[in-house]
Image (tube, rainbow, N blue to C red; front, side, top):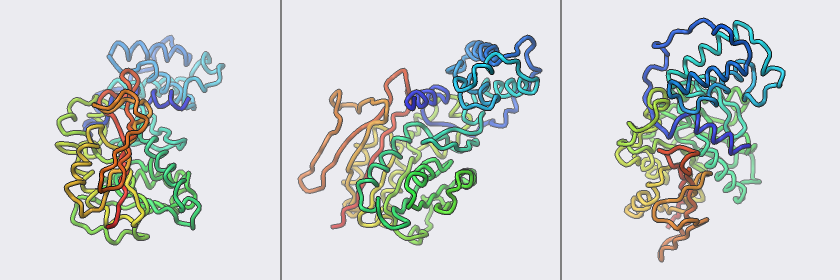
Length: 377
């Protein structure tokens, strides 16, 4: 069921990361009167499925089911009481379905249409143009939780581990970690005012505001990071902008027209923010600290090369994991559960990759996570 929900996310949002903030005020559509002769939820789903298909809207049926279920107070159409499938809707409900479906015709992501979406079991508010958390990022959270469980601070004192999230967006990663690590604290930073506001709102909504410090900060600026609240951190976690700039125009209209491009465009090789995070690691991390990143499948080789040219950072690439759909890296064997590389003069490098098979998940984004652990010489 969890995998099916993640697959639906990918189907509804269009492929990959991407986007600009163009036109999310819907100025180009006008609500129409409720459709005559359509009165039940099942009829409305069938009607809008046909309309979406005719207009080329991806995953037409799933889109219509989510919209109708939302208006009727449920998260999914299947979770509605069967009696509601055929029960006549009110004129107000019909009008609301009409308006929300009109937004979908403008290629607005379903997450923005509904105004909320689940991530790691948490219901988060979603507002354009703040980046929508993807299902593969749940894998990043789970990996961090695995790491914490293996460390001594998993049963440590209050306030441990101390985690920094760079680019918090809606707060999905930070709040998921706080909810599952009751002794932890999080510093969440983002350069977008809308993202900071939404993270505050979601923290309040989940009653986690007492253990998170939310800071409006552009990490690429000259501002010093040496005065972070609560001192050096145990873990840095980030889903940074990592799309190669030349790939941005290839992304789906749902992404290009609604999400903040600054949360997606990683520069010429998708490495602009990644390298900033790595360069700051000695200032940010405790000696035993680690960095967890979600990146493009082309990045492990680029990151490894970049780190080798900067030995003064004392950082080693430790692991790379595939996302839940399991596509392999170019050049790898067909089924490597874990690749291990042991440089003669450095700590081991462990690769465990993740990406989407064709037909089920994003075709344009193949997410992976890279863990980097500092080694003080």
